[in-house]
Image 1 (cartoon, rainbow, N blue to C red):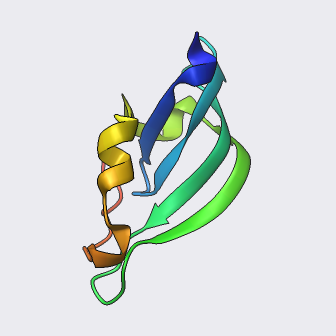
Image 2 (image 1 turned 60 degrees about the vertical axis):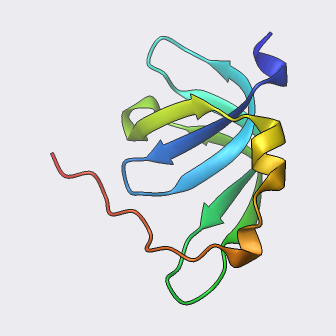
Length: 90
């Protein structure tokens, strides 16, 4: 069942969105519920911005993968600082 899968999407503009996969179609458009965006900065810890129910267009997805929730829960996001990802250039 897709409703129990937590996925991480990296968009073509470099955003990191994590949420519960609720559905998708033949164009890889996806519906995420209870999702949030992780915003990375070299000067501050990771910020988690709640998004709620969210739709990501398939043509804006660079990478998609299933999250290991046990490993993810052990991450100390307050200790992680990193440069944000650059946009995909075609």
